[in-house]
Length: 164
Length: 103
Image 1 (cartoon, rainbow over the protein chains, first blue to last red):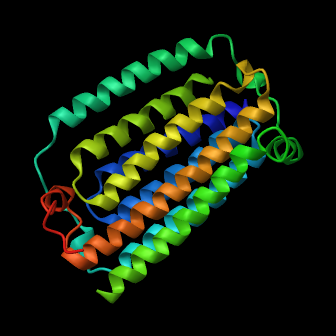
Image 2: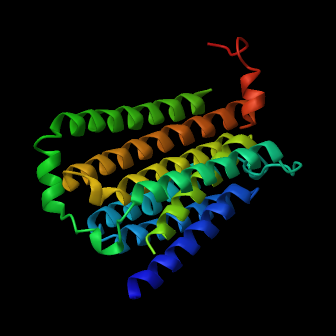
Image 3: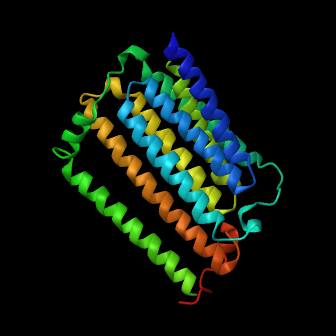
């Protein structure tokens, strides 16, 4: 019962957060909406018994990505560049979004089949660590290199732009 | 009740698609991309019980999370520099810079 209520609240929060992130014209408000939606997404993972994954998700997306977006963007450029001017409602984008929603919902519900909330068993950090440093070591190293390259490239781009 | 999570994933992807097609600021485009990316990861986690090796699937989702973080870091670095250099993050204006950028 409590899981159902938590899932309902998390889903509602995620929908409101993502709608606010997409609809807001100011970057500050959009990032706040994004952070809220990611926080509630962590809540959904928590209800699905994936506590370790939920924790990592919240640390990376709320603590890392959202804070980085706010600090990197808002402190480095002027306010008018982080605010979009009002434009007429984009019906084509809305139709594409509606089609995505319907198709994904139909496919997701069909794939879920007989899965219920009780079907989700907790996966511990120990098990994940054993897989990452065992059978998935190559993928783990590739992602490590990718993160390092992204870090170095971001620094290089930012420093290069500052010099000019 | 688990269907609610599918609704959340579908809505997040739809919101991302709407943002991707309707916004012109690079920072908003990166945020919309992240919403789509996270909808995919949520669907992957939702299908865990039907996976043969669940720990393997969670590991894959964790690696995808890292890729998403790298993508957003690079996207924002690019947005900051372009805004600083050309005083705009409008992707349509930036597209017109093709061939005119000093090297």
